[in-house]
Image (cartoon, rainbow, N blue to C red):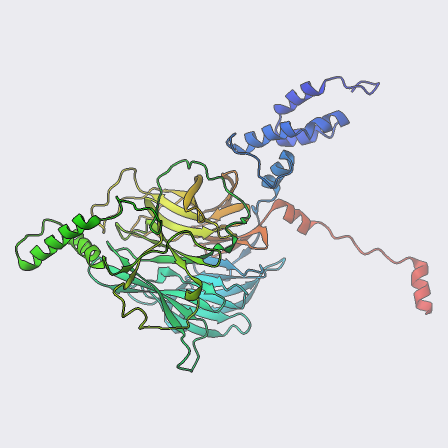
Length: 567
C-alpha cells in the first residue's frame, strides 16, 4: 500500500505471486494488509493449493459437503487423527484386534496374552475389566464385537492344540456384570463370528468330505444358552455351503441393507483404475451361458465317473482335479438356488471370504439373510433333511484375484473395503495347495453392495511381507470421511474416502494388526500392534482444544462477598 491507502499492486499480480507460495506462507502473507488478506482467501487460489499440496487428481471434484476450498484444505490438515496422545501397555503380548462400542464410550481389545480387555474411553483412557480366557482352554483371543445396544460383547478365540488345529470358540460377555453368559464352538477359528441381532450371533463349523472338499455350516446362536425349556431353540442352521479345492468360509460379517439409499458419502461409480476384480451375480434374472455348465458337460462328467467306477476308463486328471469335478457333479441338483434380485431394505447381507481355486481366500461370498431367518425359532437340526437341496448357493461372488487379508464396512453399510495382496497378472492356479505368490503391496479395494460393482480406484500405500501360506488378517476400519488400515511395515495408514489420498502414517515398533475409529468421533483413532501396545491418536485441532488452558474462575467482587457474609 502507498501512503494514500491505494494498493501498489493489482489483485491479479498479488494472486500470481501467492500461487508460487506454500499454504503456510499464503496465510502468513494474508496478515500484512486488507488487500493481501482478501487475496489470500480467494477460492481459486485455494483450489490450486489443494490439488497441488495433497496431489489429488484434477478430475476429482470437491467433497460434496465442503463449503469452500480453504475449509476443505483445513479439514484434511487439521481433522485427521495423527497426533499420538496416549499409549496403553496393559497387554503382555501382541494385540490383535480392537473394537468400539456403538456409543463410543467403551472399546475392547484382544491379544496373544489370552485376555479380552474392556476400556473406558474418556478424555484419558482407562482399563475397566480384563477377562482371562485361559481357563477355557483358549490359546489366545483374536476378535471382539459389541452388539447394537452395547449390552453384550462377542469375543472370539483360538483353542490350544497342534499348530494345524483350526478349532476355536466364541464367548458372550455381559457388559453390566462382566459375567460369561455362553460359549459357542467356532471352526475354523478365523470365521471370527459376528452379531446378527442384539441377542443372536453367527458361528461356523467345518465338515470334511474329501481331501480338498468340505462344507461350511453357518449357525445362528442365541446369546443366552442357559434356557432350560426344550421348546425354545438356542441354535439354528442358517446356511450350508460346499467348499472346493481346500477352500473354507472365513471372516463373516453382516451388512444392514436399510441404509443403502441414504449413504453418508456417495462414492463415484466411475471406472476403477485396475479392473482386476470380477463380480458374479449368481442370483440375477439373466442367464449366463458361460457360467452354466450345461447338460453336455454334466453328461460328460457322469460318463467319466461311470467309466471309472466300472473300470472301463483310466483317470487322465490329477487326483485333486478329479475330486473337485466329482464334487461339482454330485452337488448339481442338490443345491438350493440363489435368491433372485437385489437385497430388500428389510434384509441383511452375510459377507465372508471364500474361494473356488485354492485354500487362499481370493473371493468374497455374499448371501441374503431374509427376515424369517433372523431368529432361532423353528426347526433346528433336522431342518431341510426332507429336501434334496442340502447345499445353499451364494447370491454373489466377488473374485479379487489375490489373497484377501482384511475387510471392513462403511458406517452406512453400503460400501465394502477390502485389503488384498494381488496375484501376478495372468497367473493360473494349477494346484489348489500351491496358490500363486502374492504381492508385498496391499491394494485397498472398494465395492458398492447396492449395485454389486467395484467403485473408485484401489488405494495403495501399505505393505505386507508374510507369504501366502502364513498370511494373517490385517484389520481395517471406515469412518464417515476416512478409511484406516494396519500394515506389516510398522505403520497404520489413513486415507480420505472421497479423494483417495493417504493422509497419515502412524508409527509403531512392530506390525500394526488393527485400527478402529470412534463411531461418535472420527477424529479419534486407536491402533493395536505386535509391540503389545495400543495407541490413541487425535486430530491436531482436538489436541489444541484439550490442551487449551481453562479460564480461571473470576474472583467475586469484594462487596458481593462481604454482603453474602453479612447474611
